[in-house]
Length: 293
Image (cartoon, rainbow, N blue to C red; front, side, top):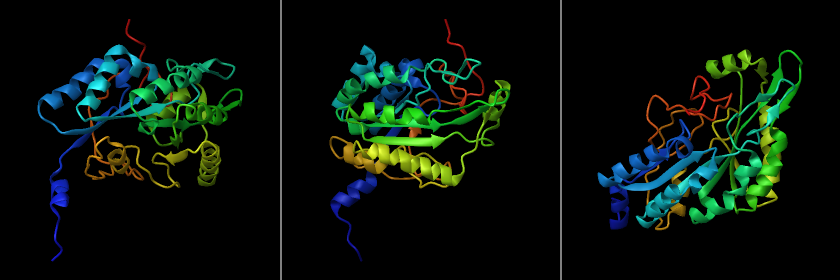
């Protein structure tokens, strides 16, 4: 019979968890107090937290004094922090002759990119940042026939984020007939989502890989049909990046096809909290919410 070493036995007993904040809404920007409270409550109850994964389109929110203090405290407790930062190139950008804002309250790409070096320092390693150029879109105005795609932003985003040492990128494609609420929203604003064929997706991915490769970066896709699966929350990577190389279980819930994400606990709550960034393509929120005054 194969013998199990003491070290392997300890690994099996490890119950440390990954907290995700949050796939459902931008907690660092709009609910930072809730985020910090949810994490600290679990720490006080004795939960063994391996990593807290932050998700935001507003990286400047990570650099608020209270959040900096919070993140530093987590690292001092042996809890790793990892960031998914989304920059699509559509923040603050007017699209088409009808003056459409695809991401009404997202920062401009230049503004978001400018703070990445400070965040890389705060997170102790730029490898703890995944930059999401997500989604890539191709849309057509139903009246004028004009088209728009944010693919032209990709090289600038990669080139400037690479200056902060970032080497990990993920992409997805906005597709029609996936989420009815999204299709209906575009119909109301007079635009249609254009379909990407599998060959087009593969071609775009190769082009982006070539761009990232110039700067030593790697590109992954997030649950894209026709492309290789990957892990946005990657237990293997988080274990390797952890300051103590702390073991984490690699369970994969497989809640979506092609999603190889390691099990995590999302602390955003259900139903999703209102997000005020107002992205037209958002599938988590069914309607746009104006910021509370």
